[in-house]
Length: 531
Image (cartoon, rainbow, N blue to C red):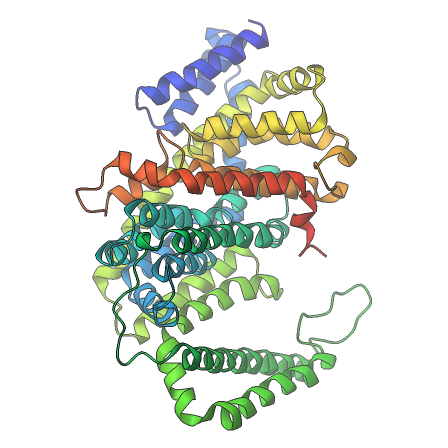
C-alpha cells in the first residue's frame, strides 16, 4: 500500500475512533498496529519476535516512559491538587479583591491575575478552571456581572497554564523534540503575559463601554479611599521587596563564604549571588526598611500586610519552583518536587493539612497522570509506526512540493493544529504531529520566518514550540470538545448550559488568535529572555 493511501486511512481511522468515543491512547495504539500490518503484512506478530518493527515500537515507548523529566508531570499535578484543596487560592483571591474591589470589572481582572499566579505555580489547566469556577464564578454572578463575560474570563484565564511556565505542554514539547525546557520556559514568559494582558485590557475596555456588564459592589465603610489604598499597596510591595532581597542577600553571602560564586573561566556567574551584587542587594534591603519606617509608618505597614498577606504563600511557591530553575539550583523535575514540598509545608503550617486532603489529591493525581500516560504510550507507538513506514518524509515532501511560501507553510500548519485541537488532546498532537512538522520547519529558510520580523536559526525550534502552545490555548476553548467548557460545567450552576459556556468563549478565542498572529508576525518576541 502506498504511503498516501495509508496516511489517508490513518487520518480517517483516527477521527472515526474519536467519534465513537474510544480514548485517544487506545485509538492511537490500535492504529499503530494497523499501520504496521498494512505495511509489513498480517504475519508481523509471528515472525522476527524481539526484533523488527514491533521492537522499534517498544523502544520508542520505553524511551518516552523512562525520560527523567516525565516525573515532573505528576508532581505538578499533585501540587495543583493540593492548592485546590487548601485555602491558599481562596486567600489569594481575597487579597487581590481587596486591592481592586472598587475598580470597574475588578472581580474579572482579579480572576485573570489569579489565573496567572496559579499558572506560574503549577501549570495545570483543568485544576485552574475548576478552582476559578468555584471561587470567582459565584462572586461575579452574585454581583450581576454579565454571564458571558464571567464564563469567558474564567475559562480563558484558566487555560493560561498552557503558556506560562511551568507549562506541562512545554515540558512535553521539550521531551518529544529534545529542546531545552528551560529555554522554552524563558521564551514563553513574554507571550504568556502578553496574552494575559490582552484578556485584562479587553475586560477593562468592555466594562468601561458597557458598565452594566460589571456593576460595582456596594462600598464597604471599612474600605480605605483609593489614594490611601494605592499607598498601602506600595507599602505591601515594599515588604515583598525586602523579603525577596533579604533571601537573595543571604544566598549571596553564603555563596561568598563557601566560594560558590568564584569567577572561573568557562563557568557562568551565579545569578544575583556574585560579590558585585552584594551592594545592590544591601541597598534594596536597607532602602525598603527605610521606606517602611519613615515614609509609610508602622500603622500603614501593618494594615498593608493584613490586606495582602494572602499573596505571600503563592509568591513563595512561585519563587521556589521558578527561582530554583532559573537560579541554576535544580532542574525541572527537582523544582516540581520542591514545589510540592513547599505547598505541603505551607498547608501544614496553616492547619489545613489532613489525611483526606492528601488522599484526595493523590487520587486526582493518579487519574490525571494515568490518562496522560496512556495517551503518551498510544501516541508514541503510532508516531513510531508512522515514522517506520516513512510517513514523516512523505508528509514533508508533500508540503515542500506544494511550493508554498515559508509563512504559507507555517500558516497551513497552524490551521492543522487548530483543526486537530478541536478533536484531540494536546498530548496526542504533540506526540503525533510534532515529529512530522518540526523537521519541516527546521528546513525552511530562517530569514523568511515572520511577517514583520525575523528570528535567529538556533531559536527556531523554541519559537515553534511557543507558537504551538499558543495554538493549544485556542484548543482548550474550541468547540465541540473544548476541555475548559467541560471543566467549568462540572462546577457551574445548573442553569448555565454548555451552549452558554461556548458562547462566552467567542471574544476570548478572538484574543487568542490575535496573540497567535502577533507571534507569527514578530517571532523575535520569544527571544527577549533568551541570552
